[in-house]
Image 1 (tube, rainbow, N blue to C red):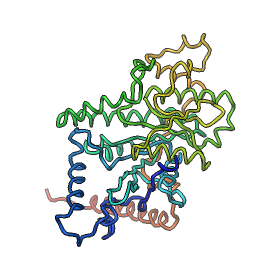
Image 2: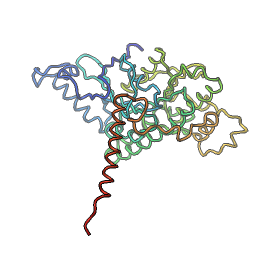
Image 3: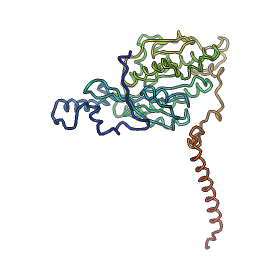
Image 4: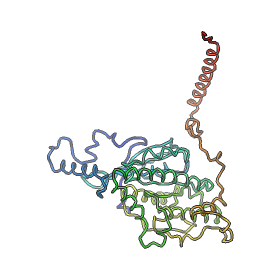
Length: 385
């Protein structure tokens, strides 16, 4: 609802929430530095700080800072979604490696502002090692992941989803194990919270494997996807519905449409500030999907879109592997050489700058010439016996 839509404010990307203006304390706490030290305001401020500092002790205290990590397809629209959430009207720039920004929400007069940390991983699947940077023992309990998949490139969809989710889940599992050694109660709470997206009487409860932290899957560029052949749209929709349901994730499609972006913003608000989840649902493949975690079912999704006579020929050890084989039969992934992204961002065409690139070429040539000259010099040296 409009009344629940928080007011975001945030700095430019790659800045840090600790770097606020001298008036930052007044903006956050609603008090001034000249106020006496033993007033009720100071006591209230100290109490809030105490609760926030002890929020990681597993005592159920609501923490005022949360993190949302955007991963997904290269040039898939992650930055556009973040800018829309922050109400920033500026063109999206290509994400270089790992970028950070934040937003704040005003809850009321003279109360601390909620803060959401936005992390964004660039490069598609080429920079998986950077996933470990924002996900730590200190942030894990308030961490969420948003996977953005480019619907206009169905052949890249499965490998992108698989590689990013596997890498993220592997690291999260390690962090939970590490957390369990120092705070077993917090680790236990996290494992229990995994199942909170699914009602206890849900018929699929024993058939799914929830992602260890809240997960939202967004299919971007729906405006292009809606012109696909109906049968192809059907396969993509059913496959993503299964994957989202299996991981206990929410699934929704979006484009540059303002109405769809507002829906996405509402979902991100829920991750960032704990606003109530939307109960609306749309499973019609001829419309943008919108399915909140726990509201779908395997019965409604149906079996993999392949003739029954062919299912027996597909050797799979798990339902996820079966859906993968069916999907890749229609949308075979590109060769490894084609999918492999450029590891060195300095050589990536999307970051091209003619003057810088020309100077780089010149310096590379000078370095090669220096190496050749040095090699000749050493070969001419005669060492004494």
